Length: 320
Image (cartoon, rainbow, N blue to C red; front, side):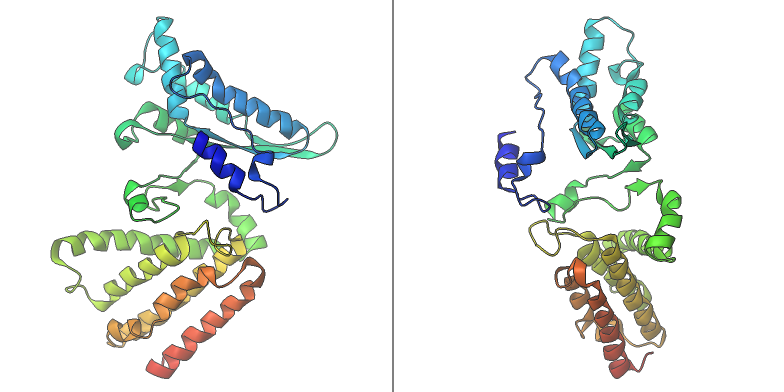
């Protein structure tokens, strides 16, 4: 908590220019505090969030972690001699979790203003076992799950969210909004990006066994494009003023450019031209750097990358 207080006081609020602590409330109930205090902590937090919501503010609450809260609930349940359920947790654990997450939402206050509460709950299962009761019941109610990966964190890939085990069930619900406000093919681009990453994961299992030299260029291209997606799209630098925040319009443009490069290179590979000749041009590395060179206010500059890809490939390989 000392580290959090020190770092938050050094961060600047991008909206007001004041320290981030000016609109941040921290509720600290560490593991050495009484069990009842730990069990009540998330209710204290969400009650404060609802207080500001009723005043017409949009609040976000991060509960770190609901697993520790559930452990405190288990201790209290044991001392009350209640009948234990899975792994010693009380049988009412699912209902308590659902009651907590149901307090999130958007509303209009009695004064006519608008307010909302967004809940982000962190689960920290023992031994990264996602089948344990707290994680399973949380996934039942939230419909969205970001799985943090230690291997990505050790590789300094931040945010270290595993794209294979993470998911969202709100994509289809938001499809009409994407089509109306961003682009009609937004979901199509997202699905194709996800399919490339899935295919790369399968190919890497083969590479670990027999190496990448035996793969045809079409499969090597998938691995190279997946590298561009990982480093140039999924990886983000919170300390870079350009890459700290990306609008959804910028994300769409980045996806379109990566897929444009992929489709162009597929035509080149189909003509039996070695992929190594394409990689030697440096286009892939240039696309990876685009996230830090184009700001959110000048996303039109991404059209230059499309023209650059077409110009270089047309000049070198005569591919339209």
